[in-house]
Length: 212
Ligand code: SAH
Image 1: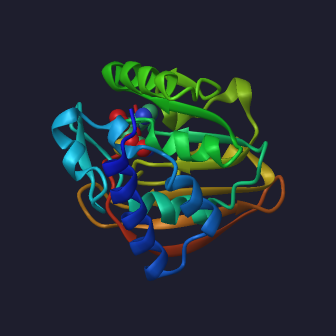
Image 2: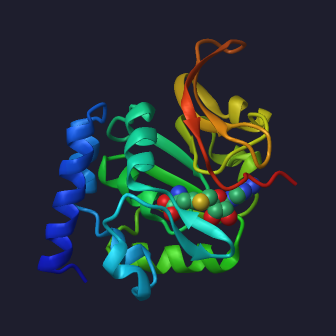
Image 3: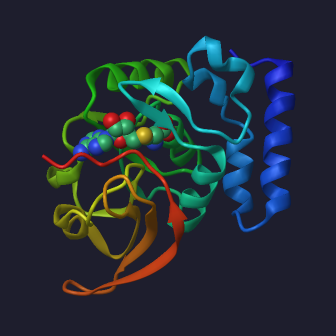
């Protein structure tokens, strides 16, 4: 599935990200090992290692590599932690989280994307990742609480269910903002049963988190 050419292009992309600074080296090392092209249609394979978002069907996109590196760095994921991802999309971000040692639970609302991601992850032997087809704005109450929660779609406001499903001491990274406008990346820490702190990390643009 991987090739010499793809490995070379990938190394170059990771070197570019490293040169920009600010990303966790462990995250970059994992990204250097994940064949991003395997998550894209073959017509995009030539571009897979550009720092760009691409269409993956159902009007959705795989996030830009720099965005994946940014969100994953801020998530501060540790091995064996339970991490909930909202928005499986292609499955690329889930692969990165899994190879960092996380126990990954990822939720997608589009069946074609869910099925395709499941297949791709299986081919890459990442079958420990648990995929769910449902509305992720409600989280996964039966498996909560989670050490980490990562939303890869932008919400108008932080869904209350996700706040509640974060462990005390846990971290959630989520883009928040009004539909169609630039969003703000929030890093939320649950500091007690009843308190959460929020930090704004900067502007970003994601496809909308659909709340039903
Ligand atoms: N993490 C993905 C990129 C995701 S794009 C990757 O690595 O490729 C955002 C995804 O969130 C889309 O696939 C979209 O369908 C999904 N999404 C949006 N709202 C959702 C919701 N309420 N529940 C589950 N998935 C949702």
